Image 1 (cartoon, one colour):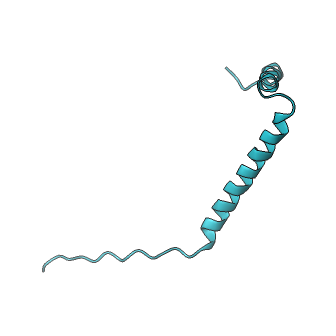
Image 2 (tube, rainbow, N blue to C red):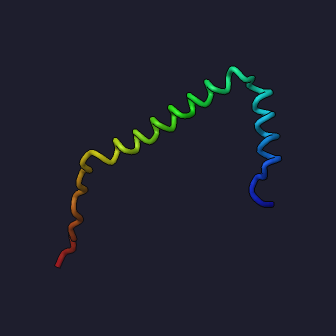
Length: 63
């Protein structure tokens, strides 16, 4: 079972077109694009801030 071929992709696109209609597909793609953009922005914003330092472990062994 290999990757999808052209025939399989065409069948999937026809089914999507029948389910959602031609007018709804651009709205779905716009929403998908905005979601991906917000996800990438969230990942970038998370890396910008300083990370809190964890307390260092100390040995509490009794000598």
